[in-house]
Amino acid sequence: MRPLGFAALVVALAACGGSSMGTGSCGQSGANANVNATDTKVFSPNGTTITHGQSVCWQDNGAVSHTVTSDDGTSFNSPLGPGQTFVHTFPAAGSFPYHCTIHTGMTGTVTVN
Image 1: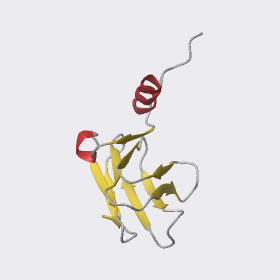
Image 2 (image 1 turned 180 degrees about the vertical axis):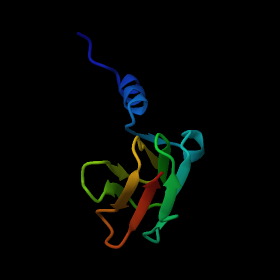
Image 3 (image 1 turned 90 degrees about the vertical axis):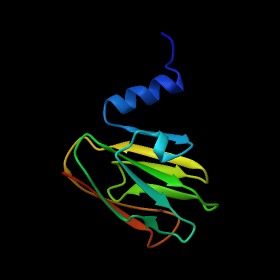
Image 4 (image 1 turned 30 degrees about the vertical axis):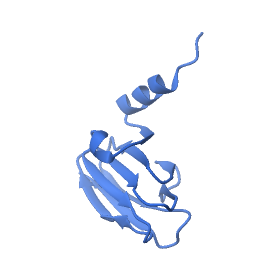
């Protein structure tokens, strides 16, 4: 059995409501909402509302690394270095608070209808 390549794994995750990392811009990701992780240690905007099945793209446009970590520690968790993006698809409705594990007080919430 051949191991899956990285591109195939990303496609498989996206199809099942998963996550992916990349470089470039959120505008190229196809996500339904974009959040910027800033050098002033805030997520902007810090509140985002989408519909279940849609995705959010976080982007680090600065020089400081961050993480995008769900408060439950299991829904999503990704490092986010300068120039990187992280996209997560939310398959179910709910409220999903998240934070940066590096910078205390850097928080946000995705509300999924």
